[in-house]
Image (cartoon, rainbow, N blue to C red; front, side, top):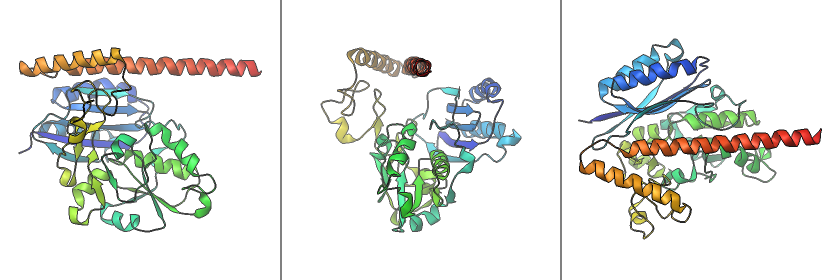
Length: 341
């Protein structure tokens, strides 16, 4: 029997009181031994949580007790040999999935296509099939014939669409092609198809429930999925039937690592991998090395994941740097506006 139940959930719905929701939700999850990450924003809720069966059921019931979330859907999977998350975080965000398009509402998404009907749709030669995930996710698996936008973050997706919408491009509107999109659990598809509709594309479809629902529903002999599906927890990847895959994750850059990657001279556990060894600074390398040392010591003492606290500190520093850069860009923009007057 599985030790951990994993629930992935999201819903686009207006939550004007989302800031006040954070602390009670955080406390309720901790009370029921549920860990993971939940994002709250004015546009809704998104996240993945894991814990004992009764804990997950309690948190889902707590959320659905709010009339606005009464129809909240979730997808389940399981982990027997490893804890999917090491801590619980309820975070406040401007968007529950960051695209940087404030006028795009996920509630205006394209047409849902059930997993059972997906193969027929993407086998149509008049359909442009687009993987809306980031490049490191696509690296380990995607649907046969899918286009990879090669985005590092979801925020880059609108720019890619604009480039492809030019005359002669993949998304040239004069060609009147149908567009089908997919992502891990469905949330990025909803927002990307809503964006496509805002740009004047009429026939836009997306996979209901995302790749995870497809892998759970469609038997492997009938599947058009190739490879593994990256997931944002300690399983790293899953295959058909949502069986955990062979990948691990680089603790420096978060890229999924195959057996071949781990055999590389550039792979140092907790410190670097073939995808990042030449991009990280010596200061970062030393910090990652110390974090791994603390994790190893904790494992030897059969203690909790001490490295999680260091991960949180690193995350906060990154967010502070991003905020500083954004502030600098805004000041520069204001100065440019003043000069042009």
